[in-house]
Image (cartoon, rainbow, N blue to C red):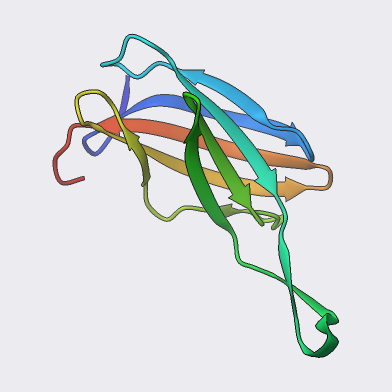
Length: 129
């Protein structure tokens, strides 16, 4: 078992994902009977600005997460730097049946036609974390 602070690491992997594809995970949350189903997606978005909409500008990297029919869908938007982007602290993505926090740390780099993701999922009792 690996712990960081009062968080228990329950999933730790480095994965490569071709552009246009996604990653499906099943993660065991210690206090739950069923596995958490998670889909990780990557996308690139730009906005058009300026007169006559001739200039396209990328928005900085961000993540959105939502539940769709029992599947957690995590979308990483514009994480396209070759050197990579990462969270600077754990990001809460949900809670288990006991109210414990489920958090995520990632580091993502876009390497030509692949995304490389280092993903760490952790659970912590609902205390100051």
